[in-house]
Image (cartoon, rainbow, N blue to C red; front, top):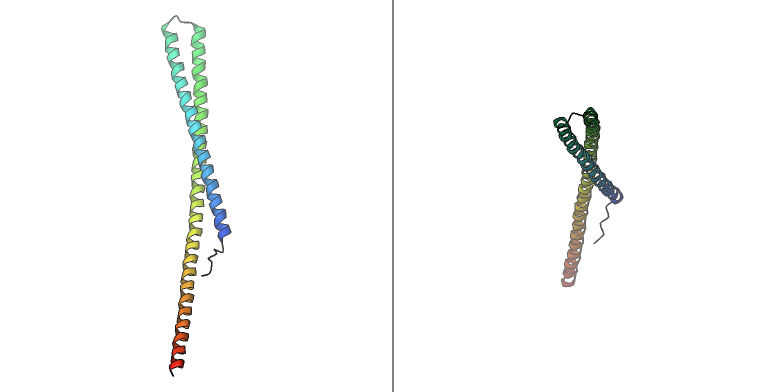
Length: 151
């Protein structure tokens, strides 16, 4: 029996590598988003602490310097939260882009695998036809020899 060789195996190999790279990029984008989200969560915790401290400052002796510091800390923290929200949104967009690229890479690989399967099925059918033809020829020859020997 002949050996099956997929004519576009090098393309299939490239598509598999592209899928692996797309999976890696997706994983990196997911980790980046998780980090950005964790940083945002930490900023919210910090803001809560600042606000609790501000309430404490207002309960005690009113010191204008402490009140101003507390107010400034809250403003800075809110600005940091706004900036971090932008970074989280960009990380989400990057994750969606990576997801889309991964989906495309998977589709392309699957397409080439289906082509390979079809080509292999055709190869098997052709081998079966060839084998059947050889068996028919051998049977015809053997039968012809028996007829010649008896005749």
